[in-house]
Length: 160
Length: 160
DNA sequence: AGTCATTTCCCATTGTATCCCACAAAATCC
DNA sequence: GGATTTTGTGGGATACAATGGGAAATGACT
Image (cartoon, rainbow over all chains, first blue to last red; front, side, top):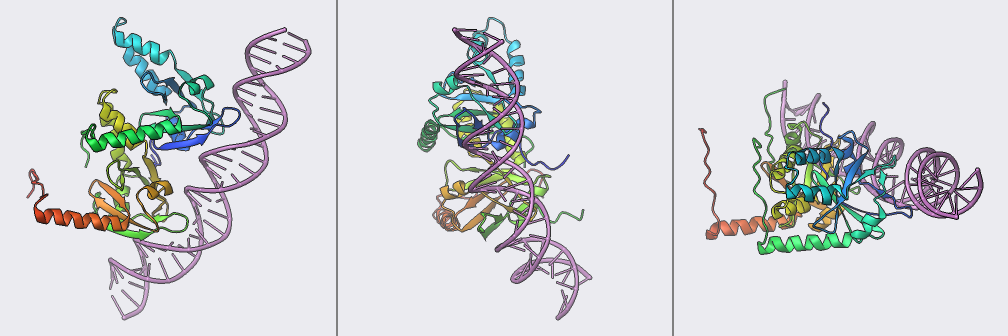
């Protein structure tokens, strides 16, 4: 295998414009993460808890579906998940120019106008209204300062 | 390959200039640490608590992502990490000449102008504005002198 | 069927980032 | 101490990301 040229994780924040046809450039660094999964699109759904659209690879969504199958059909978490997540989920294709067209109704729900922000979050990503994202960052910085939240202690097995 | 001439750790401090195209020579000793991971780049992200850019190998970042997956999806520390760390993280490729191009917006955030300082910290490294780094060193020296901080006691199992 | 609106595909443009070649200074080797 | 290899640096050529617009395909509605 050739040396690692990029990760399969979603990184960084990209703020771009939505053109008159509703098209948006899907961040280049995200494209490599998607292409690494041999896919030409992602899955997006409306977050039940935040004013954002959540996104992930199709592969990951399939894994989530499989994990859900293991829960009891009557489990409330399962019903919630199936309704809130699968119920709003959509396939988002990425065209030959690396652009996508997030559905307008979903964008309206999170207050996105002509500008849109993609926020990489590792295995997933989020779509924000740019200003709302800034506010969230400011809140997080404040919470860190006051000690309301702290860095998680991660177990990096076998890592130097 | 000849005997190990260098470690896979990030050591020492390197201060260099940024050229007109935004390129910087990635410290030679760091390059061997990266090459030891069979990689052609690192991952950098903005520290949420200090005016610095943090850096590490892609391998380590992937381990962090994996460790994070083990936390509850609703854990606030997880959300914070994903937003603050992954949200600012970028893959930083190292070109054939051993140079990299840290994104200008991120450099602006930590006050870096034409000069940049790389600080090795073992498994990770940091990017500083050179003067800010000097100040930090002075503070640390003072804190050590007054007893405000002291060296940690390390358990070196099985070491001579 | 025919018209209209929307979506998808293809081509063009611009600015930026990356590749490649070149060279001088410094460190290392013999 | 002279030669060879690294390292840091510069610049032109090239490739790519982001964006815009036309034309073809798709679907809705009358």
